[in-house]
Image (tube, rainbow, N blue to C red):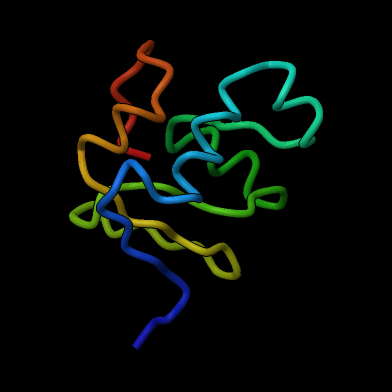
Length: 87
C-alpha cells in the first residue's frame, strides 16, 4: 500500500491554512514556496515540488512527491479561481 499520501477533509487543517497563505505574494516570497495549478505545470515542475494537492478520484501520484487528497471545498479554497484545474 502506498503511504506517500495524506487525506485532508478540513479547511482548518494546518497544512491547508499554510497553503492558503501562500496565495499572498509577500508570504510566498518569504517562504520561497508557491502554489501552481494544472497537470502541465506539475509535469514541468516535478523536480521542485513538495506536495501535490488533488481530489482522491483523480489518483495522481508522482514518485517521491507526497500527494494530499482533499475535498472540493478545500480545492476551491486553495485555487486562484482562474482555472478549474484538478491538481
